[in-house]
Length: 242
Length: 256
Image 1: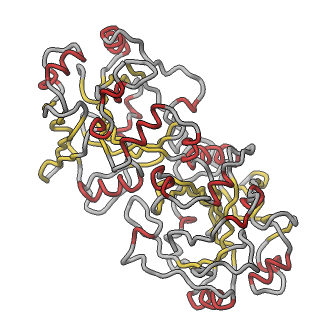
Image 2 (image 1 turned 45 degrees about the horizontal axis):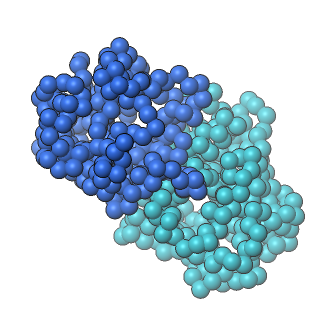
Image 3 (image 1 turned 30 degrees about the horizontal axis):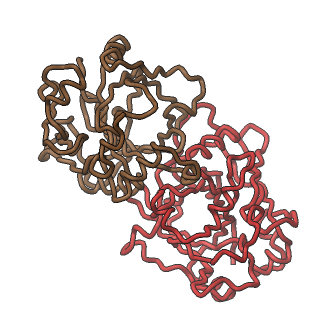
């Protein structure tokens, strides 16, 4: 599979409340227990070929004793509620990922740190290996741009784990489209591909950069459109220009 | 009146890190997903209907808006060898609402309302929509009597024993150990104080408790393990890390 959407990050002031609300809104189930450092995620699988939303937020308020730019960004984009804060693309090999790193004039974040605290962990003890690009001190999410991932362990990909049962549950059948800010030309230039709209099922709304909506198919039901403001609406990307 | 140990609250800066560490320390499994308002818990069943709730604040903006000083936050801010973990509660159980009402009356407080059906988001919930319907006492809406220090146990009545947090399946992981129940607990203060609070001649005849004379509150829990030695879970009690208790208002927790 060439470059594709892997997952979507939804920044939340309270991941428990947001997951509960999203489940009520859509019927999409979720699973719990994954975390890294001061942050945890509730995972909403979206169906084949393997996509998911990670509802992400602080679970350690003591982390706010030592602030940095990224923590302040998370606070800023969650102050008024949920915001989509990341579109995460995927490739199928480390070689492909390294090609994107070269295109980004960057390097690959390699999952080789032996300290488990530097990786996402689950309640069953599983430590999630993943590589991504571009690397750097400031995440490209803060600029409203997608990054690219390679997950070597597809069996344990977050999209394929069982969810908690919930009332009115629906079976998701995959992402139909996503709505993104900016223009297709901007995205083509960032990714170095000619037609991101067609290849990545992206529509562009000309608003500030970032994800604004995702449409998910549901078995036997109308498609589900999940709309949340992009993080750039709360924290303009110009603030994070190099 | 039959009084038993119902559960323990272990306050944590980060419930994910704390639960992972407690698993490695004891071998016990836990389950995830229970929450109420700005708080969430990871649950460790201990056998015989008793559990530990590893509890923490999971809403940064909610925390920033909370009145300060915040008793639990300040206790957890004090560093220790457990990344700030402190025991924040011993919860006793009774078997009927009538018994709970008698406890509230004896201690001059109230019973928390049973409004879980009409006000579910004021109660602990699970991802499957299950809402906990327990009630507790004494609740002091007009302020805690000075006679009773913080750290004394609250009493609970759980009408739904199968739905109790002690009786849910844990997440599978390698090297899980089966807990066989609480053997004893270590509590601060004196037996006289706890006995008076419980309304019994001798607390240690009712629950397996030992006293260390330190600050009032829970200090240790000893749990049996199938095929292994007992394990003792030691953490400082919250009161031990509070320099001046008089600066804290006794704000009722936002749940039953």
